[in-house]
Image (cartoon, rainbow over all chains, first blue to last red; front, side, top):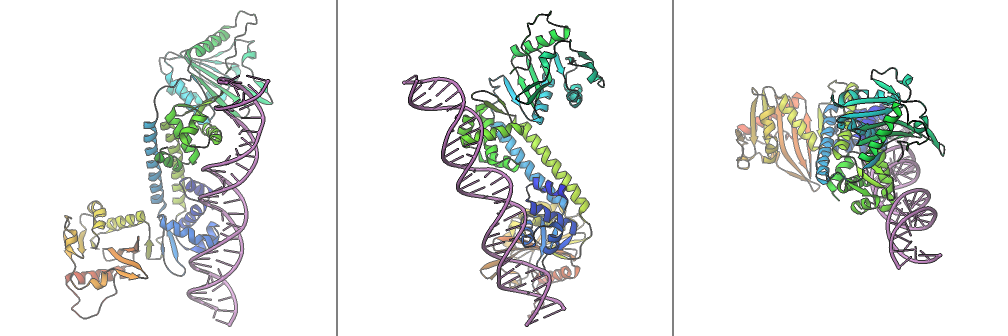
Length: 261
Length: 261
DNA sequence: TTCATTGTAACTCAATTAGTTACAACAAAC
DNA sequence: GTTTGTTGTAACTAATTGAGTTACAATGAA
């Protein structure tokens, strides 16, 4: 029994038995309950219910008899219909939610995002919004790899893009114009272990000195902290620029690490 | 709490608590767990789990604190993503099912369809497939009303269309060229009660004398019987034509009623 | 009459989600 | 310092749904 199909159909709202019976029917052409049971693995005594409800839902047709025969409605049609129904529900919900939502910007200037998709979106966002200058400090080649195309497509032409990395060697493969951070500052951005969990700064982006995103790896998870507070972002920017230029004239007047939140 | 939205989101795969919390978040802008609880009706002690899993699924972001604040990711984005995921699943399943399905015509020439959508499809089908002649005997103005546009769009230009009705009076509103059936034949097509269930012939269509569909109302349900057996359909056609022309020259040599199956 | 097959009905079991209870940590109010 | 209320966690119960089973009547062929 094809797991892919069954999973797909379940996402579209069928139960496992329904999905398996329907798939079996499609493969069999015309079939009795018994045959559906044999090829789908659905318990024979349940196939009857399931086939009945497939016909009631418009997924199959039948001829009464002994045994009764069943046949699947063409999958293209069935799936087209399911798609339409779902899309309609989606659009209606989207509309109503849009009405509901107040587009007031909200007062809290810092937010955490824990989901991969959400992080990707935020990264794109900040790239898109950068007007004059986008500063990137990156320690993860993977990160650059993933967002390489975004960097090329989302960042405005006139926007000045500076990418700073911790070790040039790790980033050889990239065609971007990179700068290496000054030495002796690993203290500030290096990995830390707290309670057996590893905190690792992956990337930090600052747009126009007023909006920034910091992406850290916490254990196995990734998290992004988005800050839209000019003061903080400008500070982060200042620090970063210092570091690149080669230091804060010695001393141990270390600034707060940019990852603090 | 907006039921529409919640239902829509559930169709897209959220649980009720998730849907309600997310909707509340969208409406609130920035909110604490407590506020979400108050506007969504989700038990306060559960809101914490739910909000956590909303952030993990990429539906919300948060700022740690006491209290922690949450905020919804823009609904357009979220729903767009859900839509994409569903469409992908749908397309993949459709593809694989298409591969699976054997396009052998199958040997059974008669099938029953019990679902409204399925019936509509079959009706369209037969209209589309009629080449030279489409005979329709209709007792239900509703039926004609529903399929009026299909009749105009699906039936081929060169196809000869004949619509026969039981009582002309019921069908006055239609612009079609109708014929009334000869009198004295109600016996053949009239409603029947069996075991307290009403069987009522709604419509019968015969395409090119070799394919036919009979739509009956059984109690509250509707059912279509599709026959692709030339003998039967030709017979049905013969009967129908007789009836229209004004009778079988008396006698009680009644043919089998066309609804027999 | 026997036997296997078809079909119905009613079950049990497991998983998920809805809804509840208890309580620790903390902070503000008295 | 004690009280009170809020925040947050954990673990529970209850309801629902869908998966899987059992028993058995009806049919039909051997």
